[in-house]
Image (cartoon, rainbow, N blue to C red; front, top):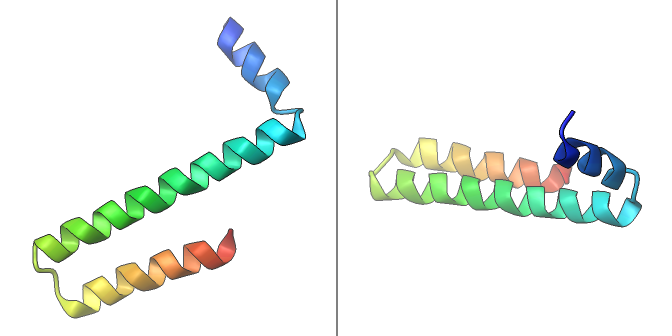
Length: 64
């Protein structure tokens, strides 16, 4: 196990670190999903497909 892995494992015991880590993960996930949606809009995907993406993002947001 590398020094970085040991450090990360140790940090995961910190509630503040865990919360911050999860917040950043959620932000990145949302950003990725929105970029995907933007690409789909730019490539003129069907309204049904776009609505599915929006619904998926909405479900994700409700789950976090």
